[in-house]
Length: 94
Length: 123
Image 1 (spheres, chains in turn purple, green):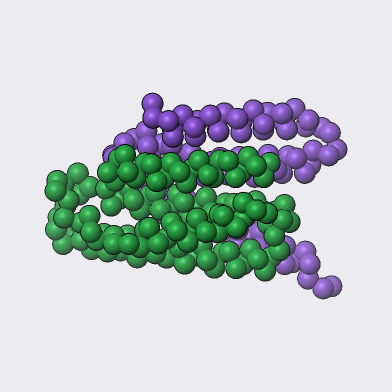
Image 2: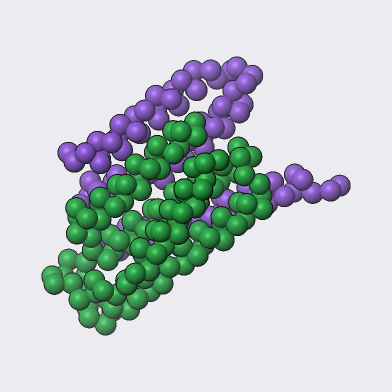
């Protein structure tokens, strides 16, 4: 298996171990923040997974893969927009 | 956590470059790759904003930049779709008459998204 994929897989495994450590603290009060960080880190990893899958699939990228990739981008922008709106609402003068 | 994000994203973007060169990518693969890079940039913006490592104003700026990057990928996809329709080719057609249809847009989109990532890595 080529080195870049090994590196990615290692990074994902490392990330999962880190997340495992975080989740072990669940129930700890400080963990509301760490839990959010865990979720966010999971999202970052999830964004990377399609790259690994694409490589594993070789050149067999279908039209559906193209549509799915646009859908992922759209969903990510929606999530960012929602967070921006929430942050603005939280800081709006009352 | 920031270092983990940075490490993962650096590996992801490196994999994009390597994936492209090793696979001899089809235009479809290039588009998927470009979208994945943009998606990673948007995700990083979201998590960085959630951690309050950037302001809402900064997030909006990065969003606009990433939208530009995404727009380049969309433009490339439109030209590819038009080429596929015109030539009746698919990603498996060899030689592929639509290789040039995506132009430099995808590389430009990746470059823009990568620049955002470079900035956010420092946050």
